[in-house]
Image 1 (tube, rainbow, N blue to C red):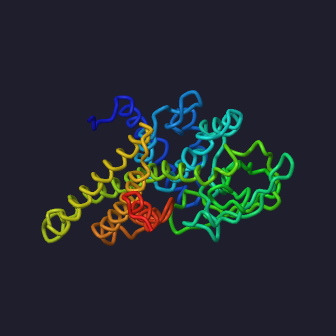
Image 2: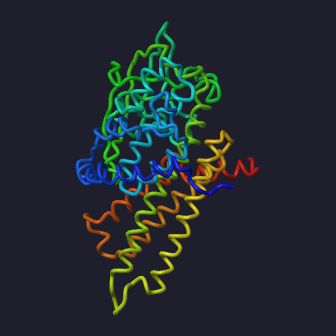
Image 3: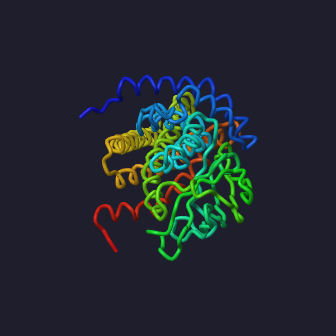
Length: 381
């Protein structure tokens, strides 16, 4: 068993660290304040081959697999959850079904420009009345000759306000239910009847989120991804990989607040000694370090399994669930360790604390993930 990264992955990690420090971190404060994703990052990262590290080189990606994707998101997650979320959508859920099941014409028109940062992708699944219960979506696409007529709306869509296209989950035949009636269709933002409303959030301000509406949108039949009726299986497939990358984001944020807390505990003096010398604080830091290390191993193990084309639904679900809980505990402890300073808006701790809260909700709530794990270990009901 080899527990070390390949030389290529190590080089990539250092390159990403340098890029994040020089090109990304200076943009965070303004992006958070204005609640806008710094779009210029997309083409800049695309030109360097950093934007979509998992996808093959022949499409313009980095060819570094899921592990490369996790390396990128861990490093970006150390700086800003919001930016990491937008980037993850670009090379994750927004394009996963397109890469896995799209035809070459679709890949040339949508996937390759997305990899280059020339087009921004979004993923349309969640609706006002359908969250964890994906089968209850109401958006429909009815066949009309060489077109689909799409009606419905999607809620809480990452990259929604800035996307150039959305890979949309719809019912093409509701009578067949979720197993045979759901499909994936690409919808361009300039399609007549496609509307966007930007939503404001308590956290991850630099990740733009929106509500998408579709009113009699006429979309060519050629925009269907893969086979009609296979949408639910494509959703499960996309979410499995997406949960691994989601865990990597959590890992990066947890590592950042741990490092900030360790540094502060060594510098902050009370009662004549650094607060890190008090058992109450040292135990907090010791547990944070232990849980982050455990989250790192479970996440990268799942990424390795995915790269080996091994079934990893259970492992992907476990790493997302565990890492999301770890980052929430880490940010909570970081707030406690930093005390009053953490509550000031110029402290990064309060931002990570707010940003971490949604992580146990998106890409599968902790409750739903535990149900999936229970079924994977043989508990059925």
